[in-house]
Length: 158
Image 1 (tube, rainbow, N blue to C red):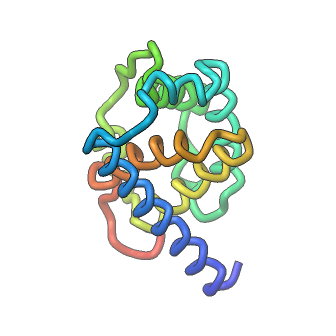
Image 2 (cartoon, helix red, strand yellow):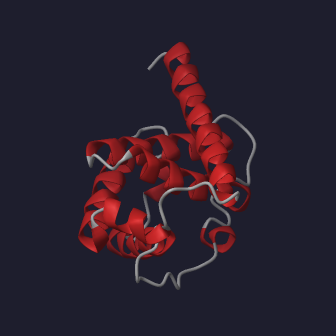
């Protein structure tokens, strides 16, 4: 991938995150038309979320920009934690009891670019799973709010 393609991709992610943050601001003002439980249904319940996470983790595994961050990760455990976290975030009955984002990413040296590639991999997974755009924006806004706890390094990729 060329620098121009990479810059374009990161720019698209940044725009997506900014757009999602805008939707979150609107939702926080009480203008949202869907409740968190509506989003849970739009994700297809726990089975749909599990499918989404499987697609997302596959995207990350195939992403040469960031897959090395996960080289020594217990993938089944990661998938379990992500399903719990996303399920809870979108209004499902699950309870995320894993580590805080700061603790889970401690010492990984995650950069803003790496975070953006990860966000793009999630957006691609949601597109693949045909998640409605409003539900995508809802989750991306939640993920964007986690960036300060996850990004701990400077540089293009760490």
